[in-house]
Image (cartoon, rainbow, N blue to C red; front, side, top):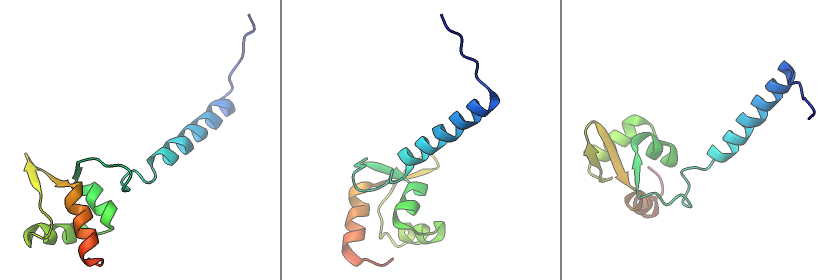
Amino acid sequence: MQLEILTEADLQKFKIELFDELKKMNTGIYVASDHRKWLRSAEVRQLLKISAGTLQNLRINRTLPFKKVGSICYYAYADIEKLMGEGGEL
């Protein structure tokens, strides 16, 4: 059995490759192909490219329906698609 020695440089290279792969997997996570039924506020803000204040205004004006579980707001993906299809600009 042959013994392989790992150097610190090998570990650094592995770390960089691992993070690159994780970044690739993470990009586009909230695009239409995701099809999750419910999204959290941060996910909605990223998908719509809006600020927390704008999302709050959408809730207050009842433009975007939501469900609150404890202190977390959840938004139906179908409602977000409907909102994006209606008016374009937010």
